[in-house]
Length: 289
Image 1 (cartoon, rainbow, N blue to C red):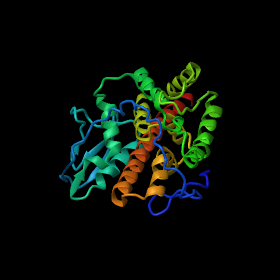
Image 2 (image 1 turned 180 degrees about the vertical axis):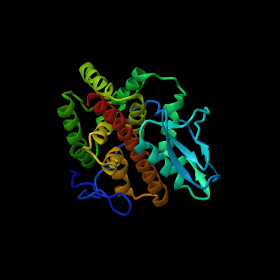
Image 3 (image 1 turned 45 degrees about the horizontal axis):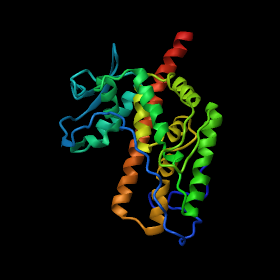
Image 4 (image 1 turned 90 degrees about the vertical axis):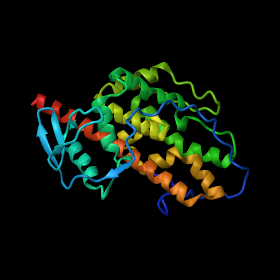
């Protein structure tokens, strides 16, 4: 699936078969990125105050227990999730903390808190519109005009994903070298709005979160449909940066940390989407039976 010009190496990055010479790469048209997914900004760290983490099932879903205390949201609501699988994943986040609780590593917990408290009071239609809006600034739809090696790289790596999305959803998605970005047909928006309406509000929170990490709705759809792995989607979202790193070198610690953080957030968001969608699917099946 992953094309030959990108591969993971040394914890993440290498562009293959690209000449080191040639003109310096220009920056892409630089879209104005919409506001990121509006999740809570968790506190940084605190000393671990519990020994054991467990799960119990209540009337509203599955709850997380820290010793004998039930986990609460920032708005003091009972922390309850819709599926046992999601509860296990969240409990694992809490159980994996060592002497210090590092909240900034607990992406699933943060997404659950956002879904439960809904701090910006957005409804399902607003969440869908926020996700579709990423099409206007989609990373893989903005192209450079030079150097030719980067133009070719974008064409070889991004075009197949766009063609896949067009065929998968029966839509038209164009690319552009203009700073104004591509023109997205109204029909494309309508189709994607209809598709996203099949997800529940929890999953939509995750979709917006992942799109904000990748700065791409198309790559997010590829992840949800299992057309891409997390590693592939992240590398595609950083294609120009990876090109520049190969050409000019990297600041090892900074770039490696940034890459790993992006992978972690994207992986957590993708898992969150699937676990939340899974709950809805199971309920529908049970109702049909």
